[in-house]
Length: 189
Image 1 (spheres, rainbow, N blue to C red):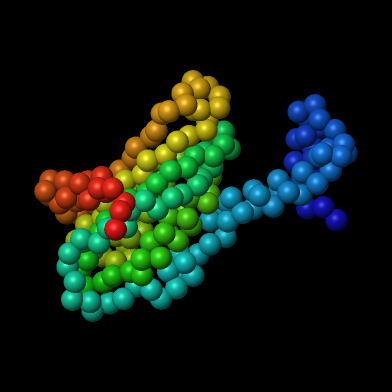
Image 2: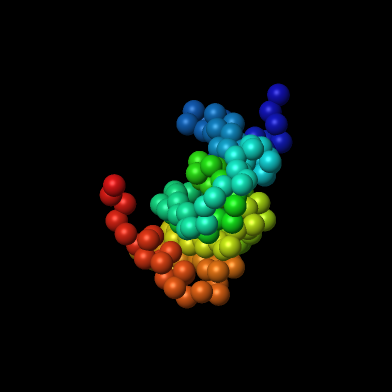
C-alpha cells in the first residue's frame, strides 16, 4: 500500500509530463517520499529529546563558548529547494553549559524543516537563550541557496549571511567583535 506522500509524488510526475511507470521512475515516488521525510524530520523532533539532559547547571564558567563551522542542510519554504551552509554559534555561560554535540543537533532540528534562513538563525539563538539563560548568544549563518542558483537570478556564487545577537552580544560591541574574529579564524587545530 502506498502512502499519501508517495501517491502525491506519483501524481506530480504525471503533471510534469512523465510516466511514473517507466523503468527509471518506478521507485522514484517511494524514494522521493523517504527523502522528504528525512529532510523534514525536524518537525518530528522534540527539543527535550534533542537536548536529552545535556544542559549542565552549576558550572563555574562564565566565558565565551564557540562552536563554529556546523554544516547544515535545509529546504527553502518558498521553492522547496535546498539551501546549505555553515552555522557559527557562541554563548557566554551563566552557570549553565550545554553538551557541544547538542548544539549541532539543535541546528539540525530546526534546519530539517521548511525554512527561511532568517527564521532558522533566530530559532537557534532564542532556543539557546531560553534553555541556558546565558549572558548572551550569537548565531551567524552563511548559506548557498539553490533557489537563487538553479532558477530565478541564477547567481552561482552568491551567499546569504544572517545573524542574531542577544544579550551581551547585542549590547557589547567588543563581545560581538571577539565572536566575529573567532569564527573568521581558519579551522586548523
